[in-house]
Amino acid sequence: MKLICIGRNYTDHIKELENEKPTDPVVFLKPDTSILLKKQPFFIPDFSDDVHYEVEVLVKINKVGKHIDKKFAHKYYDEIGLGIDFTARDLQAQLKAKGLPWEKAKAFDGAAVIGKWVPKSEFQNINSINFSLKKNEEVVQSANTELMLWKIDELIEYVSKYFTLKIGDIIFTGTPAGVGKVFGEDQLKGYLEGIEMFSIKIK
Ligand code: ZN
Image 1 (cartoon, helix red, strand yellow):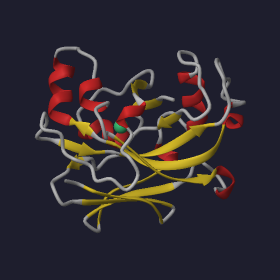
Image 2: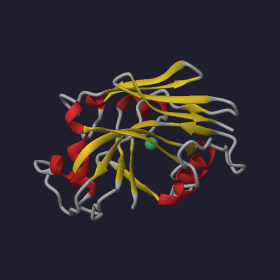
Image 3: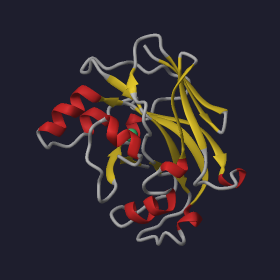
């Protein structure tokens, strides 16, 4: 399985990183080895002094598909989740400056947190889901999926032009503003409509 990640999908986060607004979604992949194992802490890797949390809404693909039209995209998932796209921001900045791929900054072991899954049917409208991240009991990121530049079904249409989507693949739909550095002993908790989806200790 693969993790397909979207960058720069919320205007306020594009502003905070002083990035240009893209004309197409920014897409990158993480391998399955980047998934943080359940109940394990996240260990800050020794190659970075500036690892950031990025809370993101997740979509789990339940059917094989390619060239999926956005009209039919809703048939390709029935669970929504929440996770973290951990990013070694210092390393990413170096790679970006050189025009190099981001994988070392984004796809390292443990860089993908995947929380619980909720049936899509529990949401009235998947384009209006509140989600948030607390760091040490303080809300550091809070947004709603209506603020996405490309909505979930549009992302499925877009990424399936390039990659065949397979059962179990997960789409990380991008992070809103409020990203920040993690420190040893931090506790990160993610919420979808107020319900706790994950709780991660930083080491
Ligand atoms: Zn991200």
